[in-house]
Length: 215
Image 1: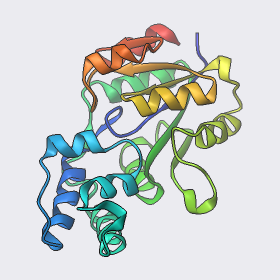
Image 2: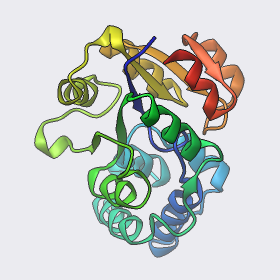
Image 3: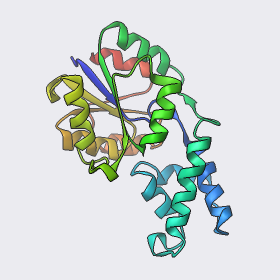
Image 4: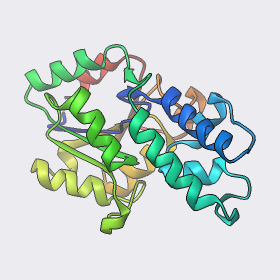
């Protein structure tokens, strides 16, 4: 039974895909590039926004306009990250149930830290004890490196055996493995069930409140 839960954000707590896809397409239109469908963008997320824009840019980082495109994405998404984003059904009830049991809670996300903080203020300030978004400029490696997870555990005052990482992707399973944590994956996120099963997590849950069986 776990005393702390560290959550991924996109595809786990929040359905952010429409706002992410709209921001990608804004950049692609701005620079005259082919526009990706939401389904394509969904497969490109998970490894941080720089990698998302690499995958969304013709020739990736080799494109001379890449850095301008990356900046445009960050500026647009920061302004529009809440347009169509919302909690997945059952997440608020899950967070309330976890808090009633005094479970320590954190978010560790590869989304840019300013956007994570903005979404935290809207959705999670009553629930989360610790929040980390991608901040490699500060020397903190993004997932699947364990840096942010270890910082979160230190601030929560817990050890790996007391902690579970909850996410929706291969990146999340690798993050948990690299951090010495058990991993629970959710079916409602950005990856298909066959992939989740192939990753062999501790459990796969179909509804948020199923997590309560493990705390």
